[in-house]
Image 1: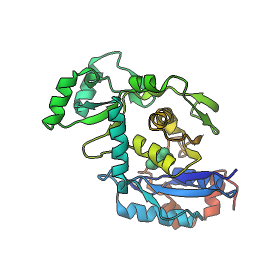
Image 2: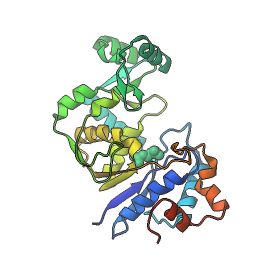
Image 3: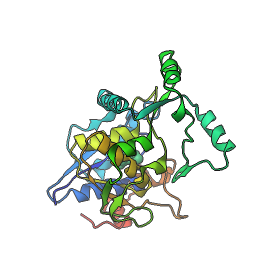
Length: 287
Ligand code: GLU
């Protein structure tokens, strides 16, 4: 099947073996007459750096990957994400949240039964119930705020029969047709003052806009996929199929992170490792 796939790194560090695995899987999935796209997810202007982007392109080329150019760079598309945000506001599905991170942490600390998501406690919802006048007044006077999705309302808006197709495996072996439970992540932030679009919003819009048919990515994002399916329904974006993959770990079983410099593609290259050695180490067939 001719798939349109993508690898979507954030240039906040060097690629490590886990990224190489994701990139190779995405490219391999498109190898039968499909298209492999590379997308630079650089909306967080405080953490992304041009030199990492250059290094990423170089490492991917060294791995033997070829992608379609020009590469889409998310930082060049804030206007499109902003328009989607306005649409969601217009549907009455977003609310301004004035809580600081410290205030949220204190609220979670104070309530024994704070709701938990797959990645820890979720937003307890202090701003969800603010009166409309107070919201308007505080936004008008310039109080710092983020925009959160009212997930319960959004689910109600689209109905409760949303699902996506998992062709790989979620963290608990999930496979096949998966019915979505986007509420597990809580009322996620879709925009902040300093970053006018969140990863969730940008990724959904871009995958649709670029005609991606199969999203391959680590199963740490499996819960996010539930939310993405909801955003697709709200924004009339076509849903791709998904293939979540296992995460690459170090010798002690700990998931690789950007700080693991000795497992970066650069470090492996410097030690004389070849692209085929990497494929072999990752259990992929050599090319
Ligand atoms: N930019 C995301 C990351 O580096 C990509 C996630 C995705 O593939 O959707 O984790």
